[in-house]
Length: 355
Image 1: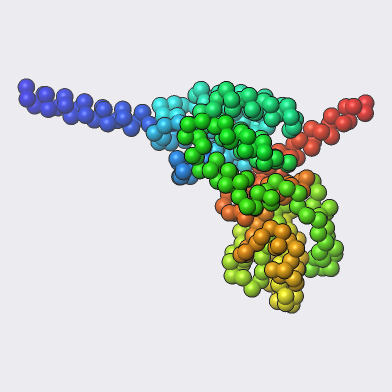
Image 2 (image 1 turned 45 degrees about the vertical axis):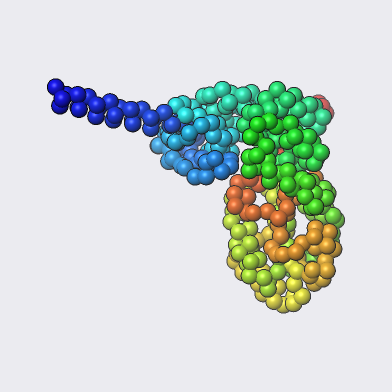
């Protein structure tokens, strides 16, 4: 009898452990267009700091299980390079599906938070940037101040736009409730907007005239309708050498034609500069500013150290500055692809009007 009770206790314990482990499992599955392609997921903040992946089968299908303790915002990257916001919840199986009503081309079915995100995204994706979109964003955040979806809405529709406006960002982050205000992305965003360099963020990039290493003259107008990564660096600065290698990797990961790289070297010795930029790791347009730290750009942006990288929108607005390049290629690729789709839609509408 005692042996039976002991066996029953052990079976109960094993069952409980197994049940507890599965209770924290979130599974995302679906079918992509690329057989044997790689699906990656990663957390949007420090609540989930790992990167997980799954290899698709021959028919493009995949399944990936994650361990999460609570609702966890993530990004899923399809084999085609599309970034899909994902909200992982314990004890849930969700499905990645095609959805032409979303600009990413994909949706995820499973969970109330995911449904809320996809619902407001469909509305905002169909709304032009401007006052109407701001009103809809404002209404959503007011109605859902504690939802993690608000953070993604602020990121995608207020900060990563061709013409972001600081006061709009400040207004919306101020309406967030609970612990959302303390999340890493919101804290960092507020610091940038309110910092002494807020006169840099989201303002127009100043006009300039430089000569490329082949003596061709370039100015700001040469980079209209492109997301442009502007880096101030120097051939004499060892940290800049690493940044140049990072830029080469970023260029490889951005497939859109609406992207350019401009490297402004703060060098005095043109011979040394020209020798350095002939290397295989140097990409983009390369110009020389022999005024070095007396350069107008250095003074305007209060640059104290190199390298210093800024992201400029197709409308010459500074979207971000002093950027960490980790994950930057995927971010720019997503922005540029979205811009390409908007321009294509705009051209199609203009053709219809002419008819």
